[in-house]
Amino acid sequence: MLLEVKERRMIFVLLEVKDLNISLASGKCVAEHISFQLDQGEMLSIVGSSGAGKTTICKAIMGLLGNTYRADGEILFQGEDLLDLPERKRQTIYGKEICLIMQNPMTAFNPSIRVGRQMEKTYLLHHGKTPRQEMPVSYTHLLHHGKTPRQEMQRLFATILQKLGLEDTQRILNSYPFTLSGGMLQRLMIAAALMCQPALLVADEATTAIDACNRIGLMRELKSFCKDGMSVLFVTHDLRSASVSDRILVMDRGQIVEQGKTEQILNTPKEDYTKYLLNACRLERREMS
Image (cartoon, rainbow, N blue to C red; front, side, top):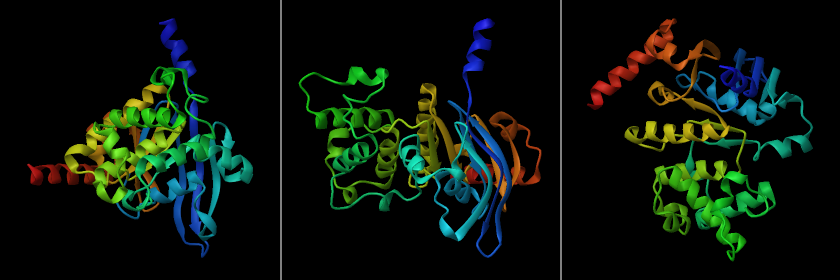
């Protein structure tokens, strides 16, 4: 019992959004009174239809709103407000501590460079070191004496890809993006983020390029990385994919409709809009069977 209490105390709030309001420069409100938190090692799914404000919240967390939007409130990452950070500090957080997986994998890679080389550049850009120089203790067994730094990186990438369900890793890493399927490119984009060992992974509709049969499988693979302490903020319109997460937050028209533990949202939803989304999933499942 004492051990369980101790373990609970070790878990801390990684991300906390407090009364976030986002509007266009014209004054039109896009999202209002958004508040939620994400613990270390937890997966939270934000669910809603198109136009609900899900992606806008992701952009706010990633500092990508630009001059088109205005945001007020607080987005606290490890206690620091991301909305009020100096540029130099932001550069040390984004791309390393916080990584983003975008919606469209087809446009994320340079078609003229092999994907393995692109992943090497991404790793070195954010780390500035080879895996042998900077790697968690849990990964050091992957390194072999006599290997070049490039071979070490390739081995690290291959291991991550295998955890994401891709077996023919050497061929994939030596391929050009246009020769790979959308599902493979999606997993490569996820791997490019995971190899930076982020504390927070923000995934904006990261399963759109993957067929419905494999979406939940990929979600489970992402969830498995939470065991190592990484947190995942997953944005989707599909409640079935969100069923893998620890908690679900439902949005509609820029507002939070309902949030809670996954079991509660799926089994005993309180709001009509949540029930509507669940019924839509059940109808789609019947049509597919």
